[in-house]
Length: 354
Image (cartoon, rainbow, N blue to C red; front, top):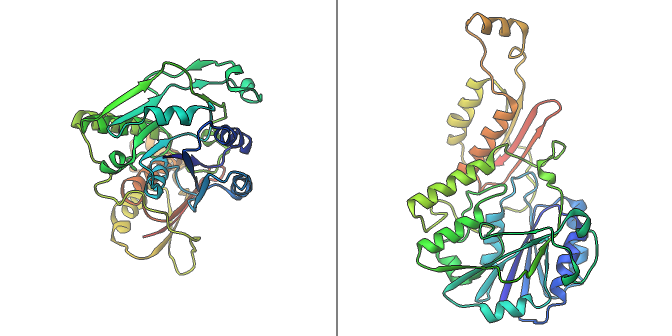
């Protein structure tokens, strides 16, 4: 028996339906699906719940993580801990699965082998069409570097503490798992004899300037540099200083009875709060509001800069956004938090339960 793990947040419901329909028509019923919604907005979460009712083989798990960075590793680890089958396929909600895919998996599975699959990518226009699997026109196919769709023996994945939850945003978390399993002495095979999965095109909304989801401007680069360090140190175990696969704390965060801090983007204020005060607070809700310092962009302050006079040093808000988010990843990623940066008026708000 195989569990297929699918993770989701704010994705077009039409894409999801195509994916689930392709699983519904599988030639083998020796599988079940855990679909984990990692903090979708209501306008996406409600239609998803309604859609899922048509598929008896799917278990839907909802995590209340709105206002938090996307963390695919944590989402997968939650499904891993909920899985009770010998094998786990880490899939993708954007895929169309060939109707004999599960049958193929059951023939290929081995307790000491990891196998991942080539994917055919569809164009935007082709993705909108409804066709039989073999009739789709594939734009291009992935190579061995694309490690996303993987079949794991469940116990092997658990033995290395699952996916590394340092990886937030997008990129490198899948390759990291493969590297660490190889470091542990297991074989990882790339299957590219034929295309068994098709990727549906979709816009990368999280990168939009209009998106309100937390977004770190160079997090993908951090992820890839971290991966290089995993390779060079021959790392095997992940999540050794944090609990992994931990289900997010339920309920909404309230600023009522929270410790409130209103500061500016002046560097001395930010550094004192992030590196000093925040580390000393325990078992409290924190409400932080950051506004632009009135003097930072003043003519007087800019003239002082020209003449190398003492000035008020401030963080650019893009730089400040990245600094706060990477601090959360490094120190507070298992905490309940809600983060927002209003780019139009440059105000940052953070509520976090420490």
